[in-house]
Image (cartoon, rainbow, N blue to C red):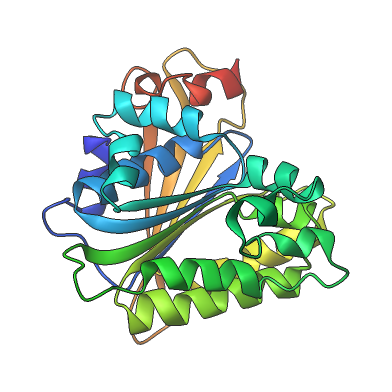
Length: 264
């Protein structure tokens, strides 16, 4: 975890908020260090986490988590974490191995179908995060890295937004849990579908952490800034806070220092 970020958000693993939808947005840089932060934060908080990892392998996330003081392997073994490894699932699905191994439809089965319905993925999330009678975990958490990949896999923007809508209703409102989603964006991009999703999610988020690289290019001491936006209940207003990230502080604690590599 990054203590500086917790201080900025007034957050603590001892008292995690509930019912929040957090959007992680990055522009001209890699904001994946925030995914590692929230993953370790909620595991430390004792929450039950469903991690839909579409960008990297389990070993990658586990190595970074260990540097942050958390073992994903141990969390899986005790039933606190379910990890959907999108890279492996896509490969198994294309070669017909997914259903042979589990006997269940793949959460990413839309890849091999003509329709881009994400209902199977939603059912996967809901099944795991709905508490059983013996569960002693705190509120459930859905973490997605990153949502933009679903478009690349063939899902339509409407299907992606429907998936997020039903997840918000189930996880945030019914189960009193939290959702954290990463999306990539570029204001100059010609990818209209991705920008449609980004803009729509911005309007429905309780908290936005927008990571931006320096417009002037690389700098030795500061690599970018995080803009913090929090929605005010009962209205559409936002409060804004900006803070520069120090390279020596946050980024170098990640295994591969993705923040630095993106700027190098």
